[in-house]
Length: 255
Image 1 (cartoon, rainbow, N blue to C red):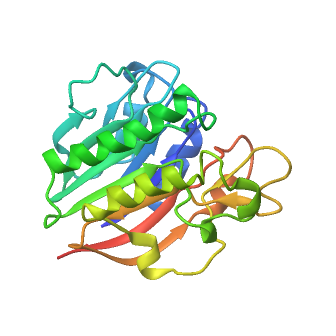
Image 2 (image 1 turned 90 degrees about the horizontal axis):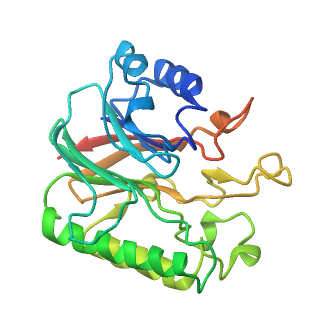
């Protein structure tokens, strides 16, 4: 299975780029985040013309996640299903070709100590509890998306500048480790150990040209998911009006 995850930072603004990318790369599954639009503005017809069906948790203006797949998705579920009154569209789950897939958009956190920061940490804890209720570590499962966390300093071009921020804070990293302790591994790191792999570059200060980035878009999988190859499509961050994120692409085998 060729699977990709990409924070498109507005599917309406990036529809042409999305369709061109699908046509070029033809993944089996593409998980999207930050759709920034309600379901009625999602380009269902355009992606269907390329051979994809889409399931999504959408929200007007903000957030929003989707799973695009060549094989129709089954057992679609939206949200964290924990009874919390939370209107933010940040999780969609579906089964594709026998693999349970979650596309997630973890909150950014705003500033450390703010209400948004507390929501981020709480949301990550809720995601861990979701897995405990709805999944098994001995079955094929992928949790991917924009985690808004750089797992380690090797995932950050200038760690000193970001240390203590919402993207690199020890508490956020601890929540990510706790999530993985349930039975998930960072699939890219199974095949690529080197520093300098990034998926997000700020629009400001020539960050892309200086390769001043962070790896905050992750593909996590259970032990039954094996990764043959993984890469970030940095070229998609270039050109006219790109997202500030680049797609992460992995080649998977399911045992």
